[in-house]
Length: 504
Image (cartoon, rainbow, N blue to C red; front, side, top):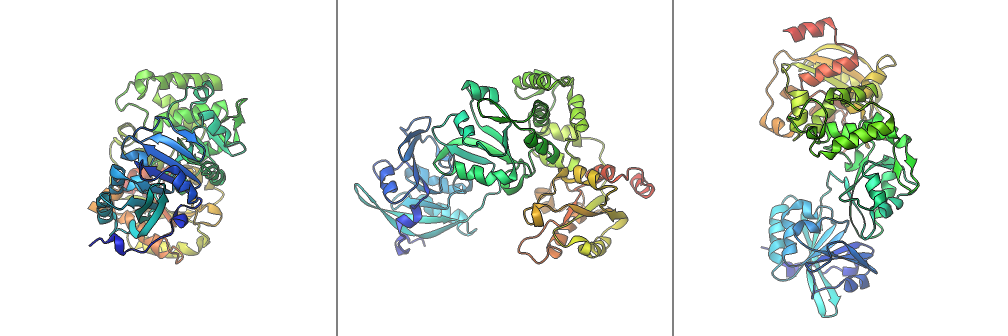
């Protein structure tokens, strides 16, 4: 049974002090001034009669409340949810970034009870106590819910409310970032929608610190060069590491103060974006044109960027892909596999082909500080489930090809010394009797074609160095098609024993 009155009292100043606070549908109950008196750093007031565009007033921001998702479209740390806004507790994504949610005693407790019923057992929500907030109309009592959840996807950030897109970018002066799209519209003052940025991993903390000083409601998608810390696209880096590195290294600052990649990098990045980020029509024409893409204007923009870079305008998708390959920024098949999730165009172009039967698998040992000491143990475990056809170290003869070609070229990992765990050894294996993937594997890893490949889960646990989390000490192909792609990077496409097994 749920008894809020039995919970301990919590000091409201301890909850709100120096924090960004949201109050939704609280008119007549609590004001921004009430919350500022308790130490709130900045307050966002959402009301049905609020302005469509965020409007700053001293220490608070006013904005219209239209529907429940408005609760999450900001960078607030604590939320006071009144009336129907409290039903945001029924959907995790609406409150996941908060540290605490406060619900007034009364009818809104029904929403709190339902939220606890859904997320209490999973320890995502916890009733932490009650608090009493002094207002001009007397003391208001609230149930305090603690949020215990860390979202994986943190790409969406919120820049300070009330600023123009150009003013938002000027907040980032001195940081290692580049604007990905829309520079001309931002300068002209008619930019609409999100601002997309590529940020170096080292500069990300500073970006968040600058945005976090005040209430933010302006949407900014910040992708890092290595995709770590939740700033990725479909759980992998937005661009391949060589392209991201070149874009940041070539950055030039315009007269208006916007950092842009070189014209060549802008063109390559836009072509990459069109091909791999869901912008192509699945059954579009072979020749590039307005009908190729989900928005007709994309083709004109591609042509303009090609001319600015002094590069040929690609005639078709094959030509665009060839340009990316020649530049050394084409993603590998395993990276395209991540991009292809819910993307009919990529699935058709890269994976709807004559299937390669299950059986072939590649494994790469990564260095998390133990060096080659783990290789013998991993070899023994692999040989219990597979025939090892050929293996070898990653050395000067193949390192560049493997590092750039496998795993999308991204070997970053925050758990590794120096933030990177490069490959140090490789295995090409054969399974003469592959096992169909289990239901769980098909759900979590839809590209896997052989249940034995998930042996890497056990290897990560057993060779993780005794840490609290499983280190990704092993990377593998998900299926035979990816393994064949890896053979090219290993220089083994003509290996006689591999060819013989594949011919079977």
